[in-house]
Image 1 (tube, rainbow, N blue to C red):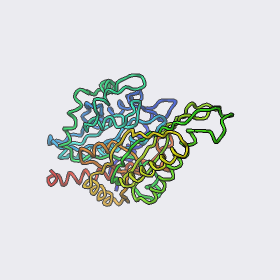
Image 2: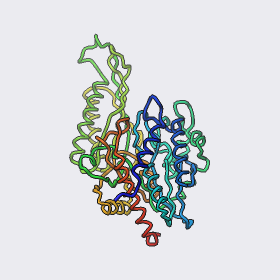
Image 3: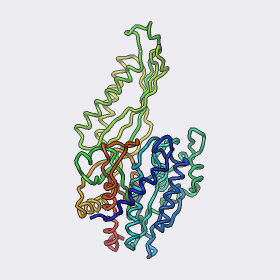
Image 4: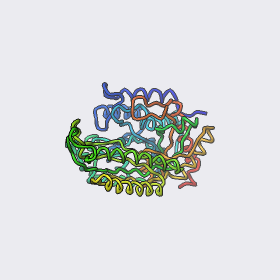
Length: 419
């Protein structure tokens, strides 16, 4: 049994995909002309569905499906329409269009609810020129500090000025989190960005948690020298030592992930070498570890072993190795009651499901700290994301939307027991 309109989903995906830089599909960077164009399209969709439309103080675009009872309670559904450069058509977008499809069903069937539903395009979920992600969801949760708002991008533009430019009001942003006392649930649909669901042939991933995400800088200080005249035994090559550490980190992470039954990944994806010249031995190397962990014991073991290896290499290679913590976003659990509802909904709809951890951060990770929140994953082809090849079938979005819709209808039927 299907509820939401499959053709409507197809049309929306295609229309929003056209809001992109012409030479870099699919690119809709936050605050860009293409982003503003995408928001204009979404605003028009809100109006076609007779939703009350607003931009809140944090810069989130919101469409409100009002209850005829002037209810104080509400449900949030949402994700984001901004993309990374050369991104895809589904990351974030699928979650926003899911919300539209759910509202279209409720409107077409004239279903009145004892609570409002608010569809959110959370502002700037993707990492951007301010070196920040989840701007809008941080904003409504009280986690967008004055320091963050005053941060400047590569052009010297303050973040708060851009939020205000698109309709926000950062002077009042600190009051937004008060609304969560009236929020019954926050739902998000997202492509998995991995291969678990596809490989197992499972329709729905009910997410139990989002990992502790942290980043750490390692700086290795060696000694520059002529590549032709400095003998091998006399070298302090920072890049060689960095390479040993990168290999060690990868090997250690693999060993831990094989033993741990929860999500554990470590990545070195950014390396800077100095002086980075063909005839000079590298004197300095800086690289950043991106670590995503659910199990705190495994995290502690990783750093304990890494610290031992750093001490060993410093003595063996006779050079300096400095370690620095850059950021740390804590482990977050999704709401168990909502997850039970989502599992029941999937089962009622004869859809297969599994519990799983998320390897990526999402807007829901912030919402879950202040409200009842949950996120479901749908399969995506080959687990590929953040590139133009990103793809999921519209029927996957339909199935996921139906699961959320069924949970909303169950909340409606049990409303008097909930409040």
